[in-house]
Length: 352
Image (cartoon, rainbow, N blue to C red):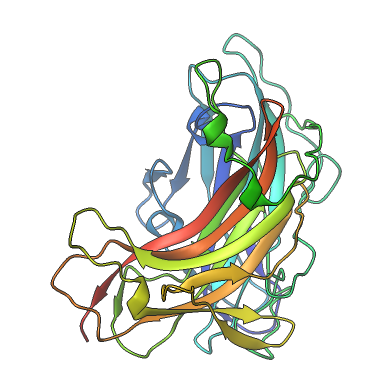
């Protein structure tokens, strides 16, 4: 997997992203394959299992017109369901001046064969050619692919990504489209329709974030990050709604939610300004303008920033989070229902 800086300026922090997954209707499609990354500094292979991109890869500085190449390997688990699979390669970057952006996703399709089958030859297509389609979503008011976090910092073509695989067979995947349904508030969730005769598997979205630190200092300093949702399915998503959130999980009676003490904003690409997100009850979060449909293998990128006030009481431990949620209308058991996917990350607040 290679990430290339296509500009004449250095990129201070580049974080790779890779998902190798089954495309079949299984409970945990990413568990059908095992993928490892070879750490060039230690020479050791590191497993993807339960590891976040920053834990696995860290980040890299990439010079002007330069590239980094990562060595990876994948194998199919013994009891994997035969059928279609894919590799999704991407990358995100940010600079010290606050500018940030994302590479256009690259895809490779392959077939998971039964254990007794003979592997096929590698495909001859390259990223972007038929059979390996990728792309980003049509621009929305705020969720516009390739936009930077700050005015005047264009990021549309700063970073490109490519993936190369061996012994993988290119295939075509198709599915019936989802009908345009009633508003999400009027229909049940797809999980509400689960029965003993079937389980709804929501493998639609692949979410990622870049820039959320493990811990933050309370105060007025903003933390910028990028959130991306990719439609990894073969169906066009209808009635798509985006929302952003900032808060903490409440596990016991008497614990506080961090959300009322926080501020959350999204970058409005149409007005080129930061817009606050605040719910009627006072919690940080709300609806983010964006596209209403998302075609297969399209992505939506949103620039967000957050902070938490020094007024936050620190008499408890906060399991805090922030991120982006995409909700859409699906069709399950002959009924319209809603499903969602998240691109979020956790952090811990601390006094300065």
